Length: 115
Length: 115
Image 1 (cartoon, each protein chain N blue to C red):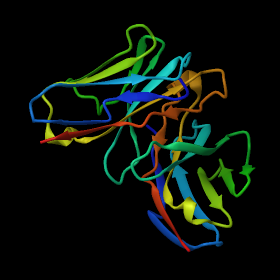
Image 2 (cartoon, each protein chain N blue to C red; image 1 turned 90 degrees about the horizontal axis):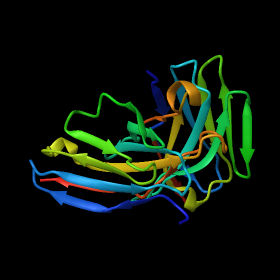
Image 3 (cartoon, rainbow over the protein chains, first blue to last red; image 1 turned 90 degrees about the vertical axis):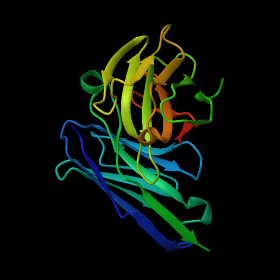
Image 4 (cartoon, rainbow over the protein chains, first blue to last red; image 1 turned 135 degrees about the vertical axis):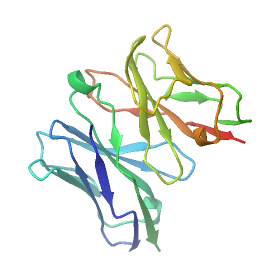
């Protein structure tokens, strides 16, 4: 089955700096890679996702890059703000037909943005 | 109905008791997923339904766990003879296949504590 590894487990940045979180996956059939943000005691919220036919996607201050050959993808947050402090999870899933697009999550990265 | 809802939000039970959780997905979402999240970890897939059919179960789902989605709308997850190791957050998510393909929307979760 799919295995997703996420690094680093914690990340502390100064407000205004950039944050980068990296994930690797094992199943070359995976073709959908979402990123979720989870604040303490709250539900995971999708912040951005990327599909295998795209190498990069950007939405305001956040961007995701995907390297299918190397089987890794990354989340980039620019101009970090205190409200970006949360736990971020990457995930991977296979095709809808083959695997029901169940998500396999990484272990999470706790991001702390210091004012 | 603007999101996935779960009930109860918190459940404290004694070891050996049975518990049942309910998930109400976003209206017209045909896929419903159950995940389990322990402290400091990413969610782990348990099972999913397409309409009323349970199509996949994780090996994490022992025979003490059973899930149903009788009318293809809400779902229940029952744990029989609870053990302390069952203590976790149980998350439900739903998606609409063929609309943005894969995006899963999560509920707030049910936090189970087994004493």
